[in-house]
Structure formats: C-alpha cells, structure tokens
Image (tube, rainbow, N blue to C red):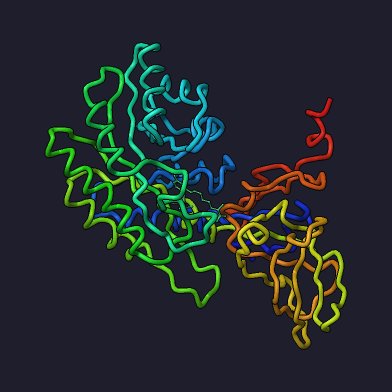
Amino acid sequence: MCEGVPLPALAEVAGTPLHVYSRLELRTRVSALDTAFAAYPHDLHYAIKANSTLAVVREMRAGGAHADVNSGGEIEVALRAGFTPDQIVFTGVGKTHDELVRAVTLGLKAINAESPGEMERIDAIARAHGTTARVAVRVNPDVDAGSHPHISTGHRANKFGMTPTQAHAMVTSMAARDHLKVVGLHVHVGSQITDAEPLRRGASAIADLAIALAAEGIRLEHLDVGGGLGIAYQAAQTVLSADDYAAAVVPVVQATGLRLVLEPGRWVTAPAGVLLTRIVDLKTQADGRWFVIADAGMTDLLRPALYSAWHAIEAVERRDGPPIACDVEGPVCETSDTLGKGRELPPVLVGDLLAVRDTGAYGAVMASNYNRRTVAAEVMVDGSDWRVVRKRQTVDDMLQWDM
Ligand code: LLP
C-alpha cells in the first residue's frame, strides 16, 4: 500500500516502471524538519534537484519551504511551482551567462557565487541592467563529508566554492560595489551525511568568517549551510535525526545572530517515494542464486549503478515458500545496471511487482533515455486518491527532437 492505495492497482492503471509518491509523507517530513529548527530563525530552501517534478515541488511550497535551484531549468521549475524570486537561492558550479542574466534580472534572494570570476561576471551583468545583485559566497571548508566520494563536495580537492581566505579577501574587496550586495555565506559539504561532525564543521567555517567580516563592519543577512542530511537506506544504519541535525548546526550559527538557511533535498523526499517495477524474467546463476530481471533499471534509478547505493527491495505480493537468494537486475545492456545485488526475496514469479524503497530523491530526476528507454511515469497518492503527476514518456515524445 501507499497510504490508502494498493500498489498493484497503481501498476495496473499507470503501468511500470512507476515512481509513486506519498503526499502525506512529503508534507510530514518537510514540517518535521521545520519543527526541529523552530527555536532559531531559519528558512528551509528545498533543493529542487532532489525531485523536480512540479507536483512534488508544489507540495514543498505548500509545506512552507522555499527553493534552492541549481540551473536555469530549476529556476523556471521554482517559478512555475509558485515561488517568488525572493524565495529562491541559486547555486551551481558552472552558471552560464544566460542563467546569470535570468537570476540577476529576477532579483533572486541569493546567487551563491562559486569563484571570484563569477562575482565579477555577476557584478557586470547587474551594472548592465542597472540593478543590484544579491550574492552569497560559497566557501569550501575543506571538510571530508564521510559519504560516497561522488557526492562529497566540501573537500579542498573538490571543484566547489573557494577557500575561506579567498572568500574573505573577495567579500572585503567587493563590499563597496554599487551593483553587488553580499548578503550571505554558503557552504555545502556533501550529501547522504550520517555524522554530525562534517555538518558542524561546514557551518562553523562560514560562521567564523561571518564573525571576522562583522568585525570589519561587513554585515550579512544569512548563513546558508546547504543540504546533506542523510537517511537510513538500510534499517540498521545509524543516521542523524532532524533534532540531532539542528543541535549540530544551530549553536554554531547562533553565535553570529544571522538567519539560518538550509537546503535539504534527500531527507525530505527520498522516503516519500518508491519505484514500482515488474519482474520480466527469472533465471538461475552458476552458484544457484537467481537473477531477477526487472523492467526498471539504471535509466529509472541510477543510484545503484553510479554509487553502488543500496535500496531496500520488497515483493509487493507475498507468496508462501522459502526465500530465494538473488540479484535484482535491470534490463539495460550494462553489467552495472542493477537495482540490488545479494538480496533475499520471497518466492517470486515473472509478472510480480517489486517496490524499490526510498526513491523519492535522486530517482526520477536522474532518469535517461539510454537504450532508447522511455522515461517512467510518476504518481502522487493522497489518502485513497491518486493522480498521475508526470506522464509516461511515449516513443514519439522521445523522438520528437530527432531530425
Ligand atoms: N545544496 C547544494 C548546493 C547541493 O549541491 C545539494 C546536493 C543539496 C543542497 C541537497 O543535498 P541533500 O540534502 O539532498 O543531500 N545524486 C546524488 C546526490 C547528489 C547531491 C548533489 N547536491 C545521490 O543520488 O546520492
């Protein structure tokens, strides 16, 4: 079941592979995170990259969140979901001229600048348009996030942000410019972080810098500590609660008196989604275990192939009998195309449904047309109702840009 709706009924009508979201879970999680920070002035800017389906983004907005975007496309998603420019922060290590023009002319709450060169480009665009751009400076605190290397961003060897020393020099030199207003500092040390220390150290790098700038008479509006709070993909995994997260970050930021900005993505949306997939083939392996071949693969959920990520996989219809040892694989012609290796499932038959858990973040957004597979549909469940919130791509949709 998802809320009051049986998963087989969804698969029957909407087909598979299918991303299924629970509206209740989305709302519950965004408000739980908000409540954890209630004691300190803050704004949750939902990281749209985690799940940018308009219906999901609109739920985040209805739950009181603002938006964090990472590209021109995500700026437009945020606007269409109803966010106003002063509710949007814009990060991105390679913002193009056109994206910066759009951000500056909209007057976003903050453009999180990644380099001194980008600050200069933003300044020039703001001057040309006779406006003042609101900028936050992204600091690279040289912190090891302790998560997968592909999603760790706060180490000095990573491409993101600039050193605290560079950031300090730049803010001092730019504070007097007419067309640039430095409103904050930004840090994001990585994603799927399960330990408080890297999050605390990232926050303290920008808090220390804010205090040094204040001593020079440069007053900011906010400290943006990014996202990164991890979830338990495996039941036994130890993770931080929302309260642990607040306890790690708030005391550090409190010393500055500045408003706190957070950019959560995964924590709010991942557990609110499952990927529903149908078994298309079964065969034995040389060692006696089974290959369970599903109709969803790396084009629908890239995380296992890209990060060796673990997602719980459950049989939707329970059958009696001894469990089978298996690898659950996708249909794409790559050995990396897997949903989960070394699993145990109840006995299953071709045609049975599997639910892959915690796919509400970095699932649908990372879809591709590799192997010319069409992109899966997405549905939102609300109590005993549900609706398609993103149509399944057709072959004609997929081929419409080919000349
Ligand atoms: N803010 C910035 C600047 C970010 O780069 C990210 C994620 C977030 C916020 C949100 O982080 P979260 O709260 O979701 O951890 N595709 C990968 C995750 C990439 C995260 C990229 N940046 C995965 O599937 O694990």
